[in-house]
Image 1 (cartoon, one colour):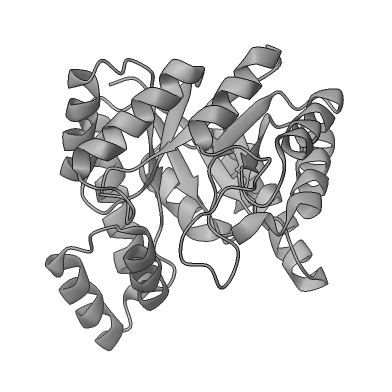
Image 2 (image 1 turned 180 degrees about the vertical axis):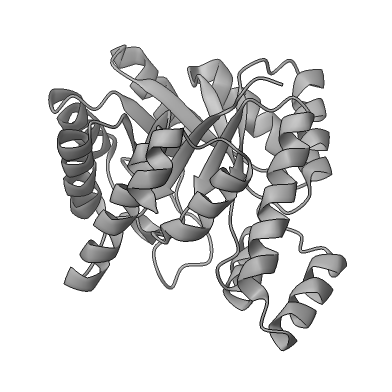
Length: 288
């Protein structure tokens, strides 16, 4: 089994306290040698400036390859491509191109009259510049807006055909969910790498709420396990074990990349990576 590449997702801070948490997260996880790290947009594109500042700071101060999220929400094509050009000018050549969530208060996505209608249009425009390595999102569980499970595969193929080099999935809780999705993608002719997105469970109630919003299925056994763990005050121990087992199953199934959604809380992701035996020996001393 080849040692996998790891990567992390961060989100930009909106307060001084959140800034401290982000930089602690980066300092804790950078020594683990990630292939890249990504920085998100807020819902509705609300953190564009903060995202740009966080990307620039991480790249400059930590020497990491940073992939900046870029969405279609609430912006013209010209405005969106100017953001991309600003990234290119500052040396950022990795983009995670997404349609994006609707602004607060809106249940569905409505394209800007002069904006990109969807993520495949955004990918095509970015690819045409020749300046970026473009990653996109993928959904092993059915996206809430998808008409059926094949729709998610069809949309991913459009994005890959438009110029994306790889995809990062939404989080899921069972390896078979990913494997079934991977099989459907291969059958559809998608040969680009599909990177599983891993969400270590810091707070099970919050994760369940998040899963409901994005269409991720929560297995009954997982709910029962965390109910028991909560009574026994073993939540963190169970969270580490569940995430480690999921990653192990994925690696045994041929996965070569693992992308961790950190929520700017690094310690559980770090513990899982150590449990998998993936952390370089020198990094363990640095982050302990």
